Length: 453
Image (cartoon, rainbow, N blue to C red; front, side):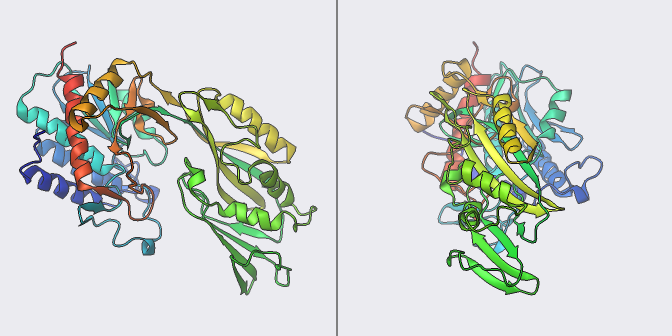
């Protein structure tokens, strides 16, 4: 199949544009927020570069107060939507990267850098697909609009703001997932358990709402017996006490079974040795009885399963003592056989039983689009044209902007058996996969926007 990338010129242009975007550390920063930059100056910079690229390619562009920007091919509001994002998560520990996370590198056909996969690379793959349609002069029965948000990795008010000023597309997709077609995204409910805890034991880990807890520091008073602590953990005598560091294996909170939770290691050590009169004990006991080594919620009554979407998951993300309280952040992903109110009822009962308060941090409704819909059948056709194989539909725990659409799904850009390491050190994407994704997006947009129905 011949594509626009066969000559190499457009490939070079695409990679140069991506390099320019990756060099912008577009992590949300409230300290630099201002007029037209509600998420900070770097996300504003990324939007400006995107707008320049889109204008160069001949699209009409619009800026919605720095919350989101768009590029449109054709005229009208009965558009096909492509929803992507320009913000990225922080790089994390730089020593875990092979190089500067904000300098894109190509090594043996693999691109490395924060955002090459999530989501700057796929965003440009879709933009270049639109440019191909424009260059070919195809008849449009619906305009095509690429919407780029600035807060996908945080609070999503970018999309709320955008759709206050714009109608919904007739249908659309987000290039912020996996191929073939993600027709189901599990609901997300993130909560915080709070327990009054005036204790001489302190716990510290970074509160991240998308990662399995992989580093937990526990400080106990000097002279404490720590002989029960597993020797695989680091024990240091400090000026203010004895510090025990529990290390796990990092994984995304939507896939807790792929990681190793440092909180579980702490609870296994301390549950049988912590004085039951300790103000920390109720929370430690709650974790031991309801969450320990259980990634699917069977112990806690949170387990639900659905024939089309599979089962939910439960992840402990952080455990901290702060201002006289012990705080536990938990991520619950759920499927169609339950809803957030039922889950909250169970979580509140658990919290009450152990003397805790419960606070809702975040909720995102689940997404499910039937396989026989016109949208999915069109995407199946497009995928088959490029890949010469049938496109299966499946459910995942991650969240894409497809959730804000009345009729939309996540569609690429990660292919089966690839591990692009989003949100992790050494995020990557094969060049050939990026180009192949652009070809698929071209075929999809031809099906959706250039085919009379």
